[in-house]
Amino acid sequence: MNLCSTHELQSVAGGYPALTPRHWTMRVSADRLSRIRRCLSMRQEDVCVVLDGTRYPHNISAVVRTCDAVGIADLRFINTTVDTKVSTLLNSAARGSDKWVRAETFNDRAKLLTDLKNEGKKVVATRMDGMDFREYDWTEPFALVLGEETNGVSRETTDMADAAVSIPMYGMVESFNVSVANGILLYEMHRQRQLKGMYDEMKHIDDQLLFEHALPKVAQILRESGRKYPKLVDGEFLFE
Ligand SMILES: C[S@@+](CC[C@H](N)C(=O)[O-])C[C@H]1O[C@@H](n2cnc3c(N)ncnc32)[C@H](O)[C@@H]1O
Image (tube, rainbow, N blue to C red; front, side):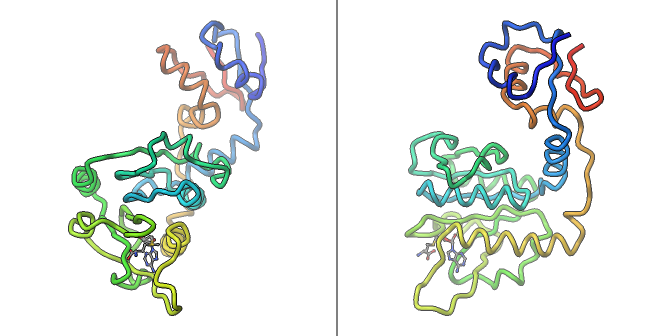
């Protein structure tokens, strides 16, 4: 049986279909596995962040990084004017957090917002004239909508939203940078959810999900070629 480190395997991942998987085990360090397990178990799966036209890559990257930090893995873009895939528009400000946050672009705003509501989430628009964000109950499922750098959240979103929240400001400048606003809002969410023990529960993470996050490229190749994932045995992923 051949053993190969994560690093080696990732470096051959491009040519992987040519290999015979049952001859391989894949080792991921125990530390990394437990970090991934912890990160997945802290995920707030009932929360999503929506960027409604937000267009500057450095802002988007900073939003992604904060989402990752508080366990939000679901980011949706509406009508972004950045004509590129999320993975290529994210710059180094994301510091690799983009690998942990799923991002998808939508062009039909009304449909996306309706779908989010049908998922049981309240659509919360961020506006300068909303309720104080500390009074909102962030422990319920929600989709937080942040706006475009100049014009803010669109009229259509405002009309369809279940609530509008605002971060009070007392200076001469009328608004925060969008990524800063996102950070302030999501840490209030974190505070409220932590008080309710929503970051305490170590949810069970199954080995398949762990594999997908530990070795995403290999997992993708296996999926595309219709092969099964390996089993986790004594800290190693083992093909049978
Ligand atoms: C630069 S601001 C846009 C300002 C725009 N003139 C407006 O009236 O919304 C960009 C985004 O950051 C968020 N934001 C900035 N300051 C905020 C605040 N004080 N309260 C809530 N959201 C804020 C909102 O998502 C906003 O759409």
